[in-house]
Structures are given as structure tokens and as C-alpha cells.
Length: 85
Image (cartoon, rainbow, N blue to C red):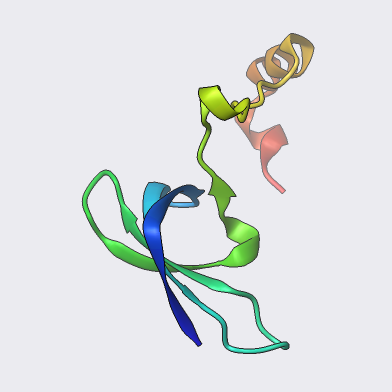
């Protein structure tokens, strides 16, 4: 089943901020799929549900979460090779 979102929803995707225009539901054994158009270049991508997040909205108290300063300092101090998995 495909559902058109009216109005489109602003989402954060692995490829950057986007507007979701459609939602595809293939059934119980699959993730919901969001059909998104990227803000940067207008590309259309279908993104599985676990990989999207609602865009921040200051008025609705939905803000970016910031890492604690100690965690940021530790990441900057660590060599790049130590960060590879």
C-alpha cells in the first residue's frame, strides 16, 4: 500500500535532510519505506524506516541532541585509525 503524505514531512535521512512525500507499506515482514526528496539536490530516495528521523522543530521542542563535551573532546583526541571498526 502506498500513502501520499499531505503535507510532506521533513525528515533527516542518511543522505541529508529531505521531505517525505510518500510512505510505502509492503506488509508485516518488511520495514515501512519513505519516499523522500533531498533538500540539497532534489534527488529521490526510498529510505527504510529505521534510517529516518523527524527533522528538528524548535517550536515543538524537538531539537538536535548534542554529545556531551567530554565525548566530543575524546573523539577529537583519538587518532582516526582508532575510530575504525
